[in-house]
Length: 230
Image (spheres, rainbow, N blue to C red):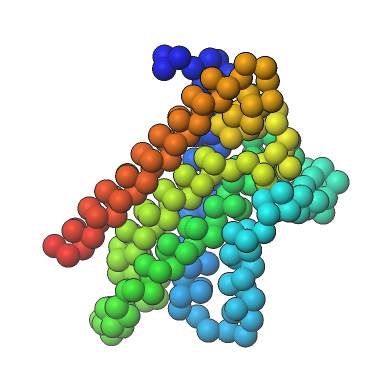
C-alpha cells in the first residue's frame, strides 16, 4: 500500500501513536496554563511565561538533554518514577511522547491563550451574578467559547509532535519499533545506501499528514465558530 516498506509503516504507526498520547496528556495542562497566563496577575508572570515558551527558542537537542538528565534512569525524576511507580521513560515510546509533548506544549498554550483572551469576560460575570460558581462558569461559558482555540492548538501540537526530531533522538535514541518515528526513520534512510527513495516517500507522507492536520484544524475551528454565532 502506497509503496511503503514495513519499516516506513511502523514509523508512521508509531508517530501517530506517540503524537496522540503526547497531545492527549498535554491538553488539560495546556488549558490550565493558558488560563493562568490569560487571567491571572502575579509576581514573576513574565518569567513563568518565558519558561512555558522556552522550548520554542531552545535548540531541540538541549531540550532532549535536559529531559535525559531529569528523567533518565539515574535522573532525580526518572529514578523516582522507576522506584515508586515502576515507570521508565528513557529509551521507550513513553519518553518519546514526553519529548514531543514538551516541544509542542508552547504552541498549544499560545493558541488557547489567544482564544481565551478574546472571550468577553462580561459573559462570565453575568453567569456569576446568576449564581454560577467559578468552576461552572469555566466549564459552561469559558470552555465552549475557547473551543475553536483549543481545537486549533490541539491539531497544531499534533502536527508538531509528528515532526519532532532533536529532543526525541537525544532523549530516547533511535530504536526501531520503539522510538523510531517518521522523522527518525527519514533520518535513518538518508544515512543508508539507496535510501533516497524511501526518504522522499516519508518526506511526502509527513507533509501530507501535517497538511491534513492543518486543514482539519481550520475546518473544526470554523464549525465551532459558526455554532457559537448561531
